[in-house]
Length: 218
Ligand code: E4P
Image (cartoon, rainbow, N blue to C red; front, side, top):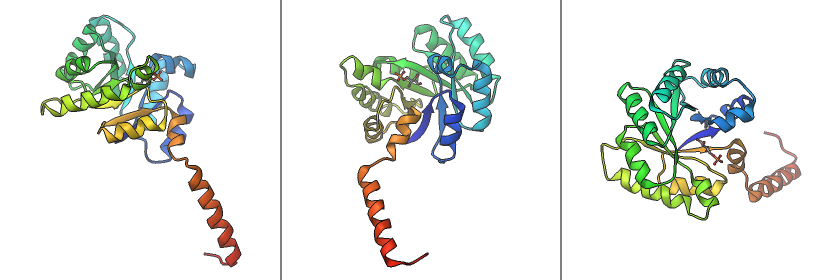
């Protein structure tokens, strides 16, 4: 399973890059606003930090032509930019245009398996089903991942990768792995939570205490 980090904060990306398990980055207009940075400048900086790794940058136009124009400008920033488009009819049309031109896309705000079928037919690189926001309104977001996985696996020509988004806690990551999702995009704080277990900390403390008693050095 690939791990993308869901942030536009370059310091957080820098820190996680050093762990060696970062496979890409996703941003959205809310994360750009939170960063307080110029959109194109920060996307370029992230792309340069992670050469060859996919970095999603989202269009804000809502009509086909506007999305294609914005997407083309974003694609020029770096070769590893992935154009993020909303799951609307116009967004799907723009996805098809980009996929015909060999430009990578990530279709966002997916809340149903029917939507995910259309996105695969349009040849998107990634589909982003939002699990946390689904859970927030009383649905099981992970059921959506299971449905999309099952459908995509039925058709060899569906090459779109399932990118689990709106991840809120480590259990989402475990469930995504069990269901065979291709990618999880995870907030930095949740990535850090993945490594934590109280029994690991206690066990390590005890080993070190016992080692000290031996008086040895390695
Ligand atoms: C990423 O591509 C999504 O925009 C993001 O995961 C949404 O997460 P949220 O629902 O926590 O805002």
